[in-house]
Image 1: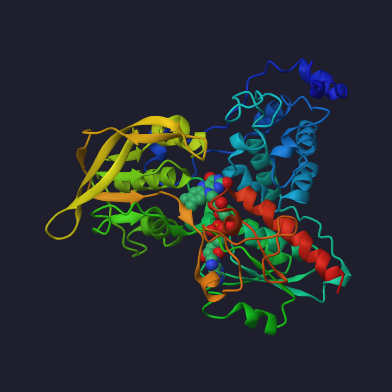
Image 2: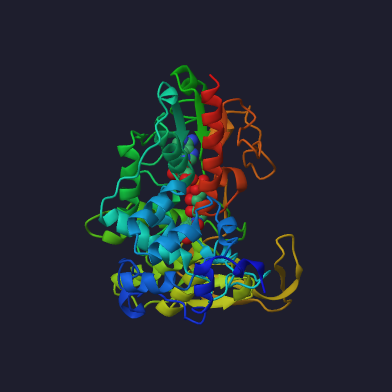
Length: 490
Ligand SMILES: Cc1cc2nc3c(=O)[nH]c(=O)nc-3n(C[C@H](O)[C@H](O)[C@H](O)COP(=O)(O)OP(=O)(O)OC[C@H]3O[C@@H](n4cnc5c(N)ncnc54)[C@H](O)[C@@H]3O)c2cc1C
């Protein structure tokens, strides 16, 4: 028997419960939800949370914790739910994660904590259906804390209160670093280019996956800890890194993210109504284009919309585009073009399922080769080639190989390109002393997260390239520990 099963009494009791089926939270009906931007997944009821928590067998050496980049004590918080100690569970979560309601909604748990759950077979590509739904439980507890307005204790260290730290970027990396430092009593100022904080959580992930008020509550918690957020400031343009140090900041954390879109470099990519997914989503999510006519942010809504890519960004863009067609009374027609098969798609499984349920069409093994415009410069057709899968590439996924003579054209009066994002460059270009790698990501000491400039730390997508929310937070936590170590030596 697996040694992880030979634990305490609770584990033994859990064994008898192993046959219980996984509990899924209720979701809005697909046809109804595609008409608007209301949240799709609902929170567990208390009964559902108790049932799901009772499936956890409380392994002696829980492998799930190693699958969580911020090392939440998953075993403990689930046991607390099973004991109906929701307040205790909330504090257990908050000890390691400042944003449980947010992570419970967006974490790709099937590639992280659920993948290392004992109910997932070793070396499986993603979590088994039977793996405990840790993310749904986390959301249940996070939302409970939000509803009950629970305050998390701070661990103020008087020695740290004389220092101030600048954080550049207010995505999950910047916000996490700010929260960790503020909880210990450090004064933190967060600088953000956009007019609202949150990074991708605000401008990229649509409200039907992460409602903006959930994000606001999580950010308000930081403000209560004394974190000051200064929007509309580009570090590297409005002020330099040197100027931050001159203003008296002891250290700087860079959570700049990866927001620069990649393009295919094919003919017709500059035609009107060919968008990058980032621009499209920013107009809708951050600038409320979907609330027309209350907001005047312009956005085109085509009749035949093609989304190119297979990641979370592509799924979000497709689902947003479909909703816009519904809102505008256009017969919906959104097709995702992906050059590999569904198995290789990097998007979260749940998002792919939701997209299919809502009516998005998928064309697999298809590679766009260009766009054809009308005489006014607007896109009217997409050109593509069919592919087959070849040998695995450096990512381990089988490479798409175009099939000769398989060219075809399809109607397309709007295209959204979601092919991956590269590092945000403004600060890097303004600060040549920062060393970067061949992808222009910032190079850091992996133990301390310090960059090539002393007292400047970095984390999140600007370091590892496009990753996940919780990975960004994991790096930011590591950097915050290094910053505290440094400050305590001053
Ligand atoms: C559409 C989309 C959907 C996604 N869905 C998921 C998901 O479901 N689950 C998941 O785990 N991950 C998801 N991801 C990935 C995840 O959002 C990122 O990995 C994460 O946001 C990275 O956090 P970050 O803080 O490093 O960067 P970001 O979130 O990009 O934040 C960086 C912030 O820094 C600001 N900034 C940049 N330069 C400067 C400067 N010079 N001065 C001031 N401010 C600056 C930017 O404006 C931005 O607000 C998604 C990504 C996208 C694009």
